[in-house]
Amino acid sequence: MKHIIYILFLIIGISTYGQNTFLEDKYEVEFKFVQKETKEPLPGSIIEIFSGNERIDVGISDFSGNQYFYLKKSEIKHDKIVIKVYGIKCKIQKQKIILKNNLKKTIFLEYGETEYVNHRSLGEFIKKLNFPKPEPFLCGTID
Image (cartoon, rainbow, N blue to C red):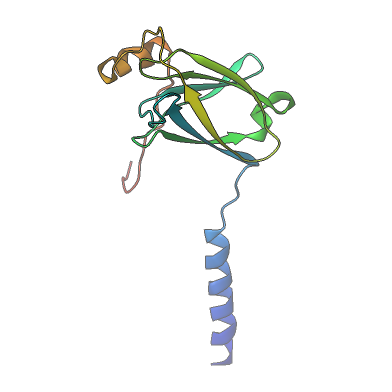
């Protein structure tokens, strides 16, 4: 009976350790895309993130114009990233950003000349930008 207490402490300790996963050192970056004149969110905006001459991530904003990234610090050279944003019917916008901590930023896009003119051309535009294939999602499957 006195060993049961020790066994319970061992089981509880193992279960709490299992819930604390090791995460690489990452920056949490959040962008919100807004049309400059109307202040309306721009869903479906495409963003590319570069560091040095290498593209480190890509994404598409959700219905409220937000896009979240977790960027590995090891991939970011000299704490600098360059973002390239393609908004629907908006000029392509390029910005240089210095990352020291997590970042939350609103990007204001202006209407102008672009190839990305409606949501229906999203698939073609993604192919043109050579998006990487997403990793398979294997939740609950046995392979």
